Image 1: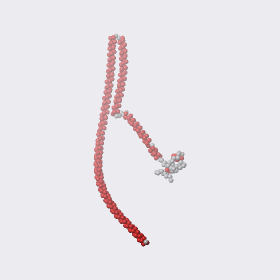
Image 2: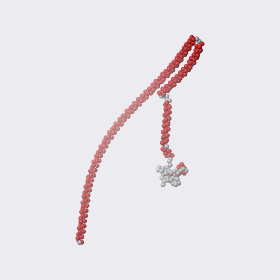
Image 3: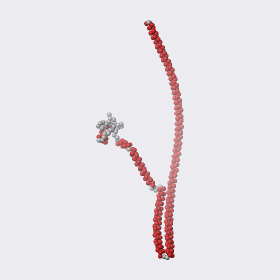
Image 4: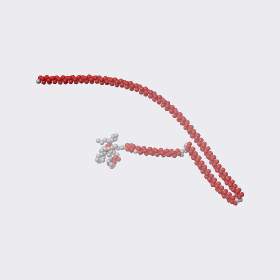
Amino acid sequence: MTTHAEGHPPIGMSNISPALKAQKTNGPKYFYGGAKNNLGQCDHIRSVKVLSQDEWKRLSSQLQGDSIEQAKLEEKRLANEKLKLQSHEMVKHWTNTFLGARQKKLDERAKRLANEEATKVAIDIEEAKFQAEQRKKAIEEAKLKLYYQTDRVKTFHSALTLTEVLKERDAQLELKELCKKLGESKDKAYVERWKKELEEATLKEQEKLKKKREQNLEMAGHLKEQMKLRQEAQKLEENQNIAEGQLLKQTAMADQLELERLSQIDQEQSFKLMKDYMSQMEGNKQIKKIERLKEEEEDEKCRLFAAAKRKMTTLRVLKEREMFQ
């Protein structure tokens, strides 16, 4: 009789799934565990194991578990790297910290100074160009006048022109010095303002540090109290352990003494049993010796009886011979 798989009821042809029927009729004939006959069919179709959808999913997940787990780990690693890069990019542009605000102010100051310096350079260049044009015009006019005037007038005009040129140069130097002082005053005001902001930020930071220090001291007090309680509990536990250890030691000593007493009793009983056994063995030897002597006596009696019997038989035979002679 065909048996079904353990833990599963037998199935008939009417309970076979359509996919299995199609595979049985159209597809190649596979061997599912029954004996295959010449027609390519299974005699033991009732022993076929039909997997449910949950079992099939479980087997598939077990077979593909390593690759899925590896893919999940790789995806998690890429996500962590992406978050790390995003965090670096976000932190790089943060300005809500003390160092970030300070760096921002320094960058703004450097940018403003660069713009002011560029403006000053542009003004100086324009002024230099203008003054160069003016000097060129003055020189051309001076040349023209010197051409038509006498040597004394030429000398006068030359001195006048030189004086105007020197005045113009002095005016330019004064203008440049004024611009320089103006820039220094602006820088000084900015530096003062920056120092003030820095002092305010420093005071705020010191206040934060003070509060944090107070919080740390308070936390340290709590931790110290907890450590004290823990030490007391540990000491109490150690005392209890010592008491338990002493009790266990006393119990162990009592058990050891009891074991020694029982061992002594056992040895005495063993010695007594051995003595009795030896006595019994000695008695058995004596009994065997007596029995052996008895057996020897019996053997000797039998031997003497046999010898006497042989002697009597011999005498009887001799007498019979004498009688017949």
